[in-house]
Structure formats: structure tokens, C-alpha cells
Length: 316
Image 1 (cartoon, rainbow, N blue to C red):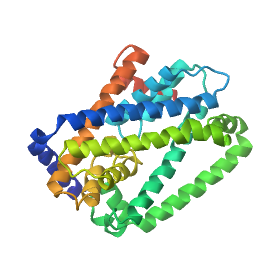
Image 2 (cartoon, rainbow, N blue to C red; image 1 turned 180 degrees about the horizontal axis):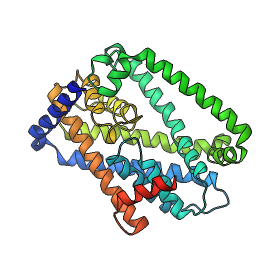
Image 3 (tube, one colour; image 1 turned 90 degrees about the vertical axis):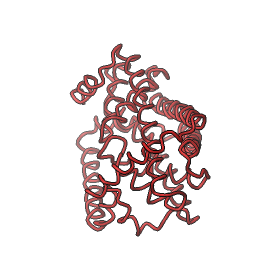
Image 4 (cartoon, rainbow, N blue to C red; image 1 turned 120 degrees about the vertical axis):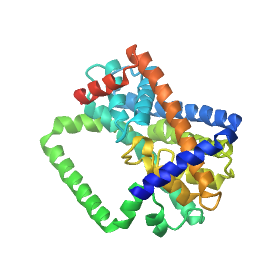
């Protein structure tokens, strides 16, 4: 932990030293591509919601504002609590909508993304772009280095969790049929392969291509050699994937810095990579937070994000 905090401090120092070298044109392009990516993702979620609530009118605008509000909350709060804000925001526009159904739409939304990330990880490993995973304990990314050093314990805990979830799901299927029915409604789009491919898979492939474009532009903006392999590595280990899977800090800060130095060690010096990691994360975090504030004002008429989070926790 001490090493990780020290490295994080070094990252902020490196970013401050290199702030004046940031190129504004590629940075602007990165933000525009990121905004387009968020709109594509919100469109995917809207399509899943429409399949889950076929008898209700789900407006794209309402789903988009709710999605952006959740992104803004996730930018400043750990443990993906922005998802609660997203659920609560949507329920304001869909009164009496089942929370279980809305939660299951989030699951349906991420399923194809998991496949895409797994494919990118396999591709980067197969092409020799990703450093050997056995070196991960030395990456000084406090979350994942801890996992790697105690992989047997992590595997055991994960196995116990999976078994427990399976048992609970089986129990729920027999004893909580009403809840199970509402939950399965959010996964309704999975039962129609054609609709899933059109509404979820195809747009998400576009979204992941946009994320790679964001990473490529950010590399250019912060003076890191820009290449497809490095952009893919940034997406795999930073942008909404590995380091943000279970963030103990807002946006996965800390884990991102160590993982980027681990993954991009051959492309630039550690100082350059650390400056890039802090700069890129700061830009995306601030941008998401600003979008979230705009979305919250559009939905609620005020900027009280803490009040909304409190109400969302109470409603859940």
C-alpha cells in the first residue's frame, strides 16, 4: 500500500511537470469521441430497457440523462455507486418500474462487453503485446498486485461466491418467483438473437472502437508514442475494463497508475507513463463529472448530487 501511494504521488508530480506539453487538438478529439461513446452506450441501454418494458414508453432522452448522471456519480464515488444513481434517475421517469428489472438490464448491458474485453485481452497476449501476467505482483497496482500475490485465496473466494450465487439463484427461482420474473424481464433481449445483435452487439462494437480511438488520441495528447497496440493496452487495463471492474477508489485511481506502468513499460519512461495516466484519468473524470452535473440538472432541476445519491440509497 505504501509503495502504491508513493507511486501515485510520483504520478501527480510527473503530470504537473509535463502539463505544459499537453496537445489540445488530440485532447479535444479524445473528448468528442468519448462523448460519442457515452451516447452510443446510453442508446444500447435504452434499447435493452425498451425490450424489458415493452408496454411502457422509454424515451431515449430519459435513458441518456440517467446514464450520464450515473457516469458522473461513478467519476467521484467508489464501488460504482453511480449505478444506484442511474437506477434512481430512470425510476423518476418510469414510476413504479421494478428495480429488479432495471438492475438486470445493467447485467444484460455488460455481458457482451465482457466478451469483447476477453477477446482484446486474448489478442494482446497472443500478439505478445501484454507483459507476462506472472509479473503482475510487481506492478505496484495495489488492488491487482494484492490479488496476484494471493491468487489461491482469491480463486477460492471467487469459487465460493459463484457457488453461493448459484445456490441463491436456484432458491430464488423456486421461492421468489415474482422477483425472478421481474429480474428475467430485464434479460428479455437475450432471448432474441437478432434483436440482441442489432440493439446491443453491433452498437457496442462501435463503442469499443470509439474507446480505442479515445485512448489513441489521449496518447497523442500526452506525448506517448501512439500506436494501435498501445491504445488497445490502455483500453484493456484502464478504460472501463480491468482496473475499474471493482474499484475501491473513484474511477479505479491507484490501480490504473500501476497497471499502466506495467503494461506500457516498453513504450515510454515511467515518468511519461505516470504523467499520462494521471492526465488522461483526470480529463475523463472531470468531463464525466461535468456531464453528470448537466444530466442531474436536466432530470432534477438542481445539482445536488449528494442528495440524489442519498435518495438513491434509500430507494434501493
